[in-house]
Picture 1 (spheres, rainbow, N blue to C red):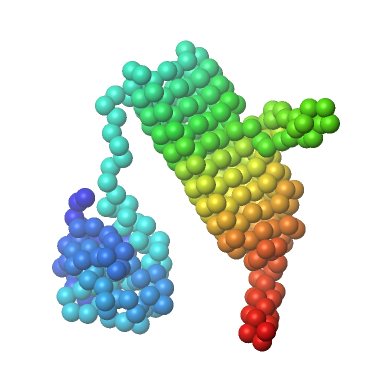
Picture 2: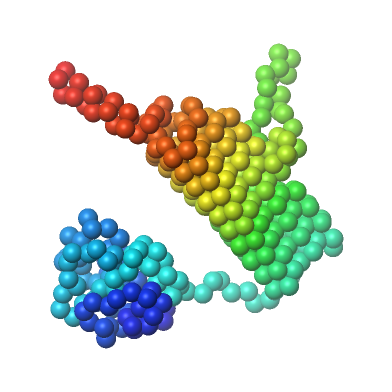
Length: 330
């Protein structure tokens, strides 16, 4: 990693340096592990108490911080320390893995596929018939893109990612290792003669621009039409999105959460880790589903729900308080 002076860092952040403005920073690090040549951050006032025990030379802090950096150390005060730290991480980020050649000799690219300028295809990739890869797409080793799928400009597919037939991936998307786009939706019906009969899933998947899918996550194809993720959605690792679900823009789903089939999320919905949402439900714009919750009814826009089954957050907290009191009295 390269080094930067704290003044160079602040040129990007456009904050205010408090304390030692001659520091040279070699890397960012979390507060409890940082050393004198590293920069960390304090994203909330409740973490101020950990600064005294940290060896970090500098920290990015919010403007409302109530402590001083101390001798030989420095703060960069900004409006939003979390966002500013992301800019610092970009400054120090190591380069992505290199390609010796644009298309590795072991890659198999069908003669009818269209490959945009600047696109790179790694070892053992498969690009099927009538696939379209836009400009500056990166397929790392062992990626599979099946027939008639499209990948938009500047998208990155990490090793083991699979895009099945007829799926559409927007521009500036990231598919992390072993993610799967377009697996069959989970559709079966009991048949007295044949046990469980598989229902054909003839739809597809459409990912908007700037969508990120975490490692080992799956977005199932629709039974009809498409499973759709709007622009800017961010999906964590080990997430399941069922067939014909529709996500609005900028939704977030944390690890081990899941949507059953035909769920609709509005814009800006946040789903906590290990939460599960029943089929055919609608979660309104800006709603938040707490970690571990089980949602069995529609959720209105802007509502926070918790628990299993999930209820409005204040109601859930009251229920838990009553149960806690009853437990003490018994």
